[in-house]
Amino acid sequence: MDVTDKASIEDAYSVVKEILKGHGLNLLINNAGIAIFHPVDETIAEDMTRVYKTNTIGPMLVTQAFAPLLKKATQENPNKVMSCSKATVINISSDLGYIDKVPLKLCPDVLKEYRCSKAALNMLTRCQAEAYKTDGIISVTFAPGWVQTDMGGAKAPLKLHESVGEMMEVFDTLTEKHNGMFLGYKGLTVPW
Image (cartoon, rainbow, N blue to C red; front, side, top):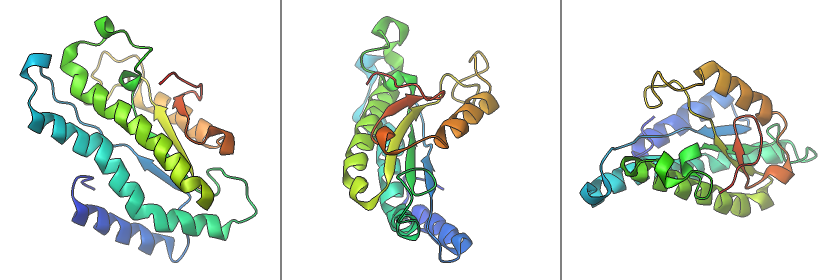
């Protein structure tokens, strides 16, 4: 799905709703991410907007669209504690979305659009955690580590299956205490 296109999101929602056959959705993973590389003094508003639209606004719109299915899942499981077996939103962020932990010297200014958008996604997760907790829905942000993907490149230390495998194990352990947290792929809390 194209997370920047409302019609694409609506189409995806229809497909998922059909697959669920009247049941709710227990787990929504927002894994949108693009990067545009410019030095600080060459960044233009259109490029920053494009990155935010995909990396931050897209997950917000997808979560809003799928919220009825998430709420339905919590209604179907009223006695379960808040967890992935009830309803959870996972927003995939980045180590580069840390504000305190990653020194600027380790993160060249050419990544600033990406870094800013992922830091904003982290705040979005905190807002979603507050907004959806009365519905019994958990919202958590994960940093998958530096992974060998098209964006991460071949020099990244983690293979895709390693990062995803670790995160999937952590997803099964999420509870209400994790609501609104920023976690690394192994489940450890990371600084904002």
